[in-house]
Image 1 (cartoon, helix red, strand yellow):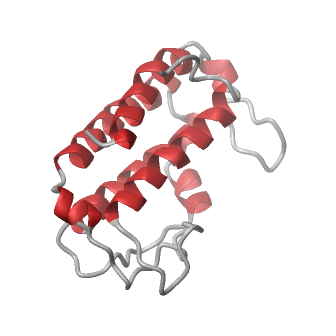
Image 2 (cartoon, rainbow, N blue to C red; image 1 turned 90 degrees about the vertical axis):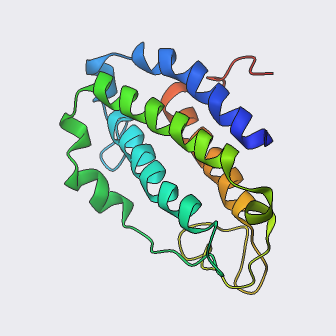
Length: 165
């Protein structure tokens, strides 16, 4: 199994009880006027899972890795994450990411490792690859997990993962 799939499954296993431990009141607190609350950050991670789910599936059969982007702030507000029940958000996030781990794990190695000269990963916020530098579905899947971990650190603190091995 790919290392990023193992990391994603461990992240969900370790983070889920820690997230549930935050509680409704604390999950709604914004750290600053222009900052997302934990609910909104987790909502953004749900949106990321939703968008990347399609990318991971379509990317297996595509000749390129060109995908539509999305305005994360508009999505967070439009879905009302700030008023959503915290436990529901945590449950949806955990379930969706366990599903994504399955999608990643069953994707054929030939599809995951095939280099794509044509992509727009830089345009959807994926900085490591500039236009013209080949990218793979493996790269995108691995970056998805790094993005998820970045935002979990925002919610749970820099050492949230403990000893993940």
